[in-house]
Length: 267
Image (cartoon, rainbow, N blue to C red):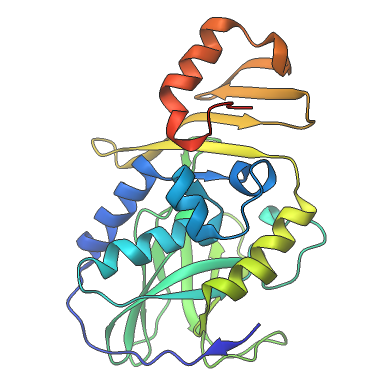
């Protein structure tokens, strides 16, 4: 992968503006590997265009496009993940997020794949440990993240890194690296590797609950084999078995609620 220097600059964007973009993402864009593993797409740009969904690259790209329409410049950046989320076989750099400069020494980092509620507010000249909130949609719990800009680690060829850990487990750290990765490299070296080692298609459909300031999982559909699927609605598994035996009512419900994330034949 080739990485490029990010020149931080002053531009007007507030945490509220960033959070609104995240809310729109959680309402409309689903984390899904169906476009890659079932429909054969290679580009996260195309998964967004055709299926309103995709992996971490696609979700970050959606936000990049959203902010671009507001005149805000942002950058796809490489990242690692905590061990609890790492897929066996992938490289240390196995994830993509988004960096949004707002001053010459300040920037936000957002990670829609980890369902951030707040951006990481990184300040080079006023660097201290801060806390942001995220949601584990599979357990319906908030998981605070502690973060701080740190020096390079053994994997780091980058200028800066933001080191994070979930408040409940300070030894399981991960990093967001402050250099730009191109969409093409992200898809070829990060997205493709993730699909190789996690080939079973899945989709997670969420919605933002503004009143309670949380992200809610509506559906989680997994296809462990080409003939079988698991359907989770909210926190409850409502079906597990052959695709051909999915109850007609449930299949119709999924088709109505999730049609924009699939082609004509959902499975």
